[in-house]
Image (cartoon, rainbow, N blue to C red; front, side, top):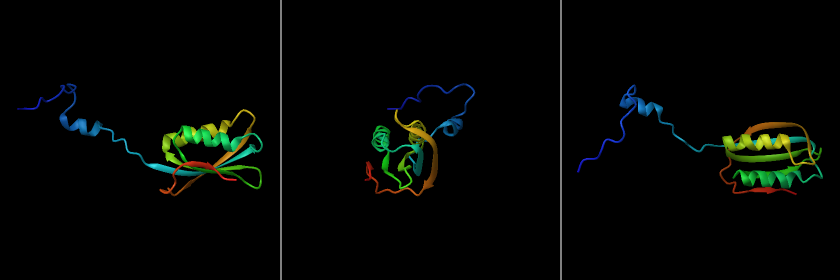
Length: 118
């Protein structure tokens, strides 16, 4: 029994061109340290961060820093991390985000969820 050759290629493409056009979707995690400055204390910012991270399937942690800023160590797929950073710039309703700092870190394969540190 012979296999059918499948649908015909576009007239301008040669079979070798299909390999060049193929896109390989590979999950490559990234990990970042994000520090959020502004009115981020007493407004539920850390719990809000946990909810955002969980909704994006990101892992890591967040904590309040002694200077009042909020630090998040977050890991996941690149485009999801970009969405998380956009959310950090906005914050929850009562927060006033003045600025954020971002630093790349080495990936930690042992992370399993996103949690709030006390």
